[in-house]
Amino acid sequence: MPSKATNLFFLSIFMSLGAIAQQVLPEAKHKLVVIAHRGNHINVPENTLAAAREAIASGADYVEVDLRTTKDGHLIVLHDATVDRTTNGAGKVHAMTLDEVKHLQVFNRNKKTNKIPEFREMLAVCKGKINIYLDFKAADAAETWKQIKEAGMEKQVIVYLNKESDHKEWQKVAPEVPLMSSLPKDVDSKEKLTSFLEKLPLKIVDNLPHPQLLDALNDAGVQVWLDVQSATEGPASWKVALEKGVQGLQTDQPAGLIKYLQDNGVR
Image (cartoon, rainbow, N blue to C red; front, side, top):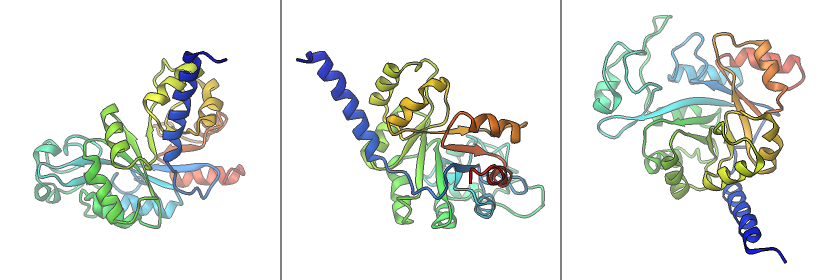
């Protein structure tokens, strides 16, 4: 007869698998998922509506965008905690009103006018055309989910979490939303992986510090979408990533990556 400790161990596994199973990924159109990092921003500014439209035009499966909150509680799309790097303004997002943010100009090489978009605007551009990989920087889960539902995009969004506390909020607000985060380097065995997923049920991870755990991740219903964006990104780095057997790649060159995948029979 199995011991009480053994029974509790298997119960913990089933509970974590159950929480993961509740999270349903958007329907996949391709064997390997391509994510446009901050949109397709080769010719237009990152995290703008223009970058999302360029991502759609490139054929990417997801556009990755970053979510932050203004002083008066509005959700906007911006990577940094300040507006300094990407706009003609200065200051912290959480200290600025939406009106102040909307008056800023986003720097652009082609001289066209771009604004920091509201999350609602980004949802409207993407609906039915491309899924959203939402990097949940600083926002309220309930308000975010409310806007996703209002846009009718419940089945088009996955959420990347930067804090464990955000995981609890999302599990409470919308347990069906696919959650993503990074595997700690010290999770280097199946036992540690089981313990980690029990504590933090995820549907996707963005790294693979120990490649030998890929099968265990897949058996647990967890996909691996690697970040390949870098200054030296190209066919060589794409080949290395694909050889790991992952299910997705996040890139700064979505059109180039997609052509590479097509040329190699992967898409």
